Amino acid sequence: MNKVHDTQMDFQNISEIIVGYRLKIGVMGSASGEIMRNKKAVKAARTIGAEIAKHNCTLVNGACPGLPDEAALGCKNSGGKCLGISPAISVISHINRYKSPIEHYDEFIFTGLGLMMRDIINVRSCDGVIILPGGTGTLNEFTVAYDEGKPIGVLTGHGGVANHIDEILEFCKREPGEKMVFSDDPVELVKKLVDIVKNEDSPDFLDDFLIGDNGVVTKIEEKMEGK
Image (cartoon, rainbow, N blue to C red):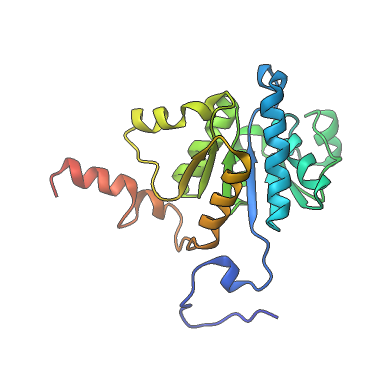
């Protein structure tokens, strides 16, 4: 049994605090459209899901069709666990209104928040996030994950917005940082991300990554002011 202490904790990683905790790796990507006809991308998504299971992590996604569901399939076929963060208010709404799958999931959180607000809960439920090929929805999930300071793995070479993350960061005058990895190899990508997550400190305060003493926005403003 884990004990709650009144004193300041010396350790920060969630695995040190909660014994037996399964890291949660989010998988974000296209739910439909042209990318779903890209067999290379579909195969990579399934491989990523399988690798998440092999690393004894829980796969988290937006409980949508498309590449995230292909990753869930790969995870379940390898004996893993999947958590779906649904935009719907109930399982009935999830199936009928959002036309979303239930077959590959062990648990759901029905947020009732709709697609865009669901993305925030989706990202915050993860210890690390993998960005697969996708469009504006996937880009939204990436920007939330980046601004939340989540460890991020980007699958390159398979199409979609994932191939342009480095350009987007450069345009926005942001740096990838030590918590972001890029790879066109799904197996390598999962391993590198899990290694980062295992050594990642849990944030003390909301928005620390952006506006904390060492936050990225704080540093940019200090640089502009010549400090």
